[in-house]
Length: 437
Image 1 (spheres, rainbow, N blue to C red):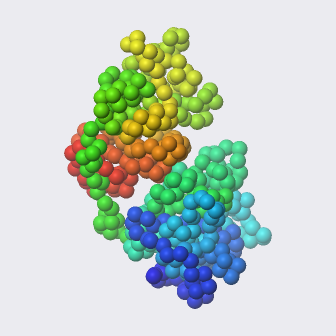
Image 2: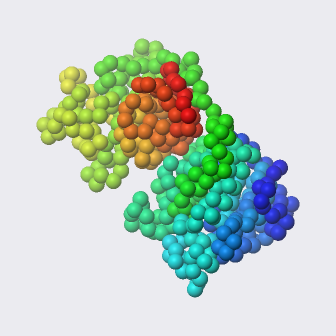
Image 3: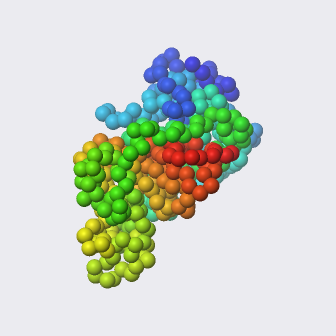
């Protein structure tokens, strides 16, 4: 049982009063949840009833954080909401830290006659000395528990107006686009905020500069320490070596293709993923099951309104679903959600191959929605991507992994891939690869 060496263990220690549950902190399990106290002084936490593992109180005059420990790292703390019958929150290997100050956009300059940056910290605009001290705390968690220096791919929304959630303020409060589902939370390791935890509604710590915090943590560790703790992806299991990849592609990516795969004795199938808009408002992306990225390769518009060469990403779902295959056999494009349900009904494992569109990396909601369907039907599904498609293959895998999927990289081209980019987000590799720094 351990605590951060810079933390005072006597001033507000609640370990005996609230012994909690034992946490299993390893590189494969450890999570740190960051909160803000929304106060200018040490909270009393109702005598420990709502306390985190740590509190960090900034001193603007001394330009340093003072830490207090309230529980051992390996003991569950009490700062998260945990509903009956849902996922575990406080007890799911989460070390929690509260930062004295505020994330509230309304208090970004002044608060009860006090001045930000002088009398208190507005954490989304915190100075480097405060972010560095927080980064050093995370670096220590990495050294002692293997904590991944990684944060949710969906980002950190402001506790106030934020263009990523227009019309809602505070953007990070409630059922925001960045709050993890239960399945995502169970799979997540690394650093998140209160705003990311399921069953909770709080939006702290707002749009803190987590990228800079993690950079300071990496700086404190040094490159050698960081690389030594990463694990190389494994070769795909032999049992995954045979899967249906029927030709033409329009047949493989169809309901009839699933039936043909089943009749041929396959137990798995490769399904290609592209995107289109959900509707004419063009606010939400939909994952569709087709190989090529443009109309005209395999599909045409019976109404003649959509020209060959038009990208599926520019179309709406009502437009895509009226397309038919050029081979005269009437194949059509389906949503990936439907294909996943149908494949699972037929007892097929699915490898979803994400193509190169940036939405697979930038819109994590695509993967979260697919994960919800997979969980509901009990699908056996993995997500894979090629490295030669354009865009960031590692970012596509990161988004899928954050949603709880097992990930596979398919090296192409030079086959020289970055350890730093791929190892944290890739479970398996299929094919020859040379890992480089």
